[in-house]
Length: 271
Image (cartoon, rainbow, N blue to C red; front, top):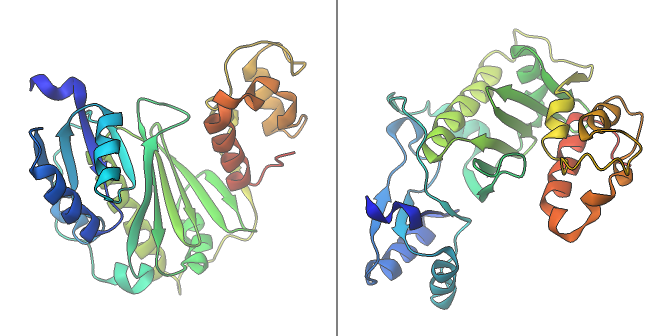
């Protein structure tokens, strides 16, 4: 399709926001297509809208009509796997209540991919120590509790009332990872009487994740020759984040926020 250079995906927190946006945008001359979540994600999230146009123009039009949305990102499809499978087990609603997409944006650690944050209606903190027992590796912080695991190039983090899926390839990959994440939560719930919760912290997310969020200037202002050396020092708690002065600049806010989030998630000192 010729319009793909200007194609964007519009995400919503609520079903009613999706319907409002479709009504508003259907009357315009731009290309519009509704993309439903696959059957195996039924009930998790509202549909998304694929539409043509410049991002700033789309934002202005939606604001003019007072339409709420939680993300507007450039359309890209990398996923080639078949998104087949039956609907999710009904127990997920008993455990999580509901899922609400809070935000969708480009990932700070890889701007060509997506970062999606979802909120759960019910707190599932009691299951996170059990989830840590079900997976190998990852970073587990029992104080929160939080669990961060790597799935290929993706980073998926679980908190008492939220799930963050970082570096999704595209919306289709997001749906697949979301279903897998919910399945892990359900498995912990099913096996809660048969497995021992993890009590000790686990530092299975290494310096590479820190490095992904640094400026990559190798300026040496922190006292280390390269950003990679600084990342290792942060991971081993031999330095502090404030020594990376380029990260304090205004245009680095997103990277800094992402790095602070990561350090807190895996239980490392931030200052």
